[in-house]
Length: 216
Image (cartoon, rainbow, N blue to C red; front, side, top):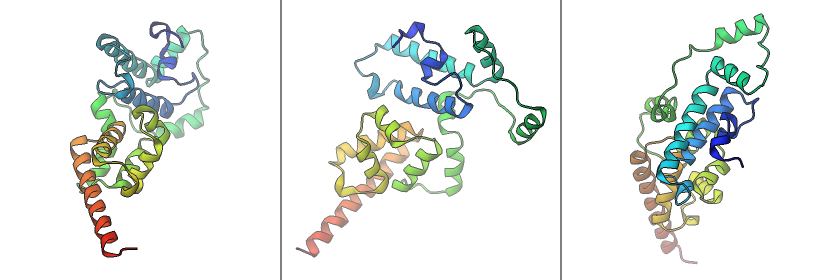
């Protein structure tokens, strides 16, 4: 892998030069989660100064590649030809369906954009396994991607979504799993972790009582 200072925007976000807007945004979110200040992925690997520099470069790469005009100019600086524009008819249809473009949002608001609105409509404070899965899918993330960032076995992540409480380890570990999962999906840890852990504890107690009441 090239040194950080020699990587271009595409290499930094680990996407191809042909990546579309959705791929770039997904890669950006994954990079932000991977190199967050409290991420396990950079613990004891990068110094504070290097980590700050890397996060700044990730922000810059996203700002350029998410803006069509700036991206074309950047591609030109790399000696790449800009993609051919669509036909007028197709361009008209796309523009008519596309919402007006706004300025890039700060990381915190970007991470929660869209999902918060849907969650607010639901009006529920309960975070169960199904709700975690919906949050992940709205982010366009696979369990393997979250596992790569958090260093948590994808099997345990699946057990979280399926609420297979008996197959999960001790509560202290599950709490860490839920927090890492929520962070990757841009959710509020203060809301997610207590809610899920309440379900976890209640589910285990109910299961234990069930086994005691029906001995084999």
